[in-house]
Length: 463
Image (cartoon, rainbow, N blue to C red; front, side, top):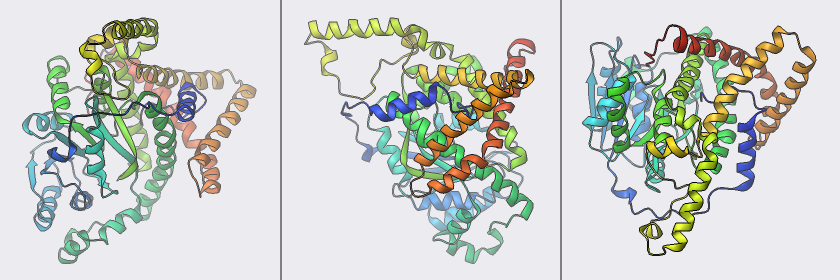
């Protein structure tokens, strides 16, 4: 969610419009892999999640495709996260392994260790404050991963976890029966102030997620067959690719894989020529931070995106390699026409197929690099322009820009809310102050990133 500055008049919006009008790559996939034989393990990184972990495990138990093993990594919790998980795991008959650390070491080392210690084909990462709303969530992700060897990660649609969502899952089997006999394990009701703060965040994030996932990311999937990075709270990886990624970058960066590991992983997969796909038909619910902590998370997301652009500059510079890539494709087509018996002619079909390897990215770039470049341009240019217009008191141009941009937001949100367009209209207006506030805060994030990069030279970026 870090790639967009929440200002919709820009090239990313235009690309999504074009993509949705044009349609996807029509090449039929011809994968030789059978998803029915895939071994799936699920990893839950958790820190002080006793109020949420029961809902997470309950949603796993309801899945149509059950993981072979569920590994809960309690990263030094000070509450009873591990005890709650063990009790419910035994009740549900989950093959649950609990790893309890004395002190927190972070999510990145957790993913790295489990990618090496597990031997599954697919590794699903599910945060301890997230539950799978769709009962076929894992099954659909595995099916999508096995459509083509070039797909490295798959995720669904994420939406904020509302209070009524928590009540519904607690009142549904199997969690209802467990809580009836373990009343002391029941999640506590939050006070009015906490509910108010979370309601603000959920309102803002719900609209943001609709715009990004139902429009921007959907358009990127059509044009490029990928999004920039998967949604890290509920994502399935090909474990082999994930392990290779950590093996490659650990000697270079250690565990300092930017302030948000899922963004770095997404960039690294694109850099290899793999794809990160998002499905529109399955959903998860994730607990959002309360409003006072919203700026903290915005910093992590935005800074991680900028840090990843810095590390993967070859991917970022893809638009400037377009002519070279076009010549290479033309030569490849000519070779195929003059050598009909070459092994290239017998490759299995795959939509959005491209050569793998970092060397190819460095020389020719990637089509998805266009999305990275445009997002980086918007991330830096929009907040900077807004600040300059405010300093110079350019009220006329600012008002015209504001009205045009808000009109476009209203159109997009209403188009993606069939049956609720009137509500979407007022939501688009009501969320405007928060949108522009986050846009101005991105100017602060840019300054902090520039300070780390060129003044303090602090590259210990880590979650």
